Length: 268
Image (cartoon, rainbow, N blue to C red; front, side, top):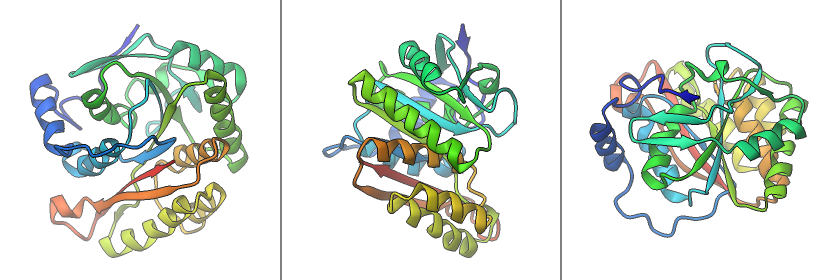
């Protein structure tokens, strides 16, 4: 079974050659010493808005043979914590194989996760990461996970389960948490609120991130995916968290009264 692209021609070009050109323009021409990262946070808006941030993040890291991608379920369709074990995911520039062994290990390790392809059918937050991964390493396998709202304890359980299966695999596997930051607020408010969340990520503090986003009502759509990634990363002994780039949609649209914030962060 193939999962076909849901937002090709909307969030990014639906034409293979045009998409390749689009990503080439965004990815820095010289990748100097990409590092081994345990996890990253990368945005998922249309490439015209957030592509520069995502490109900078992916250009800074070594793309592993398998990449776990965790993204928010914007439509609320399907199971709450859905692993897609379809055979392949298709985008105009590549066909990605699913890491079936890792998927089954994770389903066995944590009962919160369910096999559910339906949750992924129309979701864009994971798909928008794929053109960058394809450009840098076409033979990478993926493990797509779509998540709805969760308690802090559930985030911890899922993150630690991901860490367990990565350790058992004895392979380098990077985790991509897909998230935009503040939505449809002034640029001043976005920068102020987003900085509060970013500081918690840089401090490798998943509890603090979860708490400040909920307390301050920061409209960070990937708070659950980011918290899960941080719990996994801590279990995998990360020590460094680095802000790669931050910007807002206002830099493209010229509208600074209603912006969306985009942060690119890597942990290693």
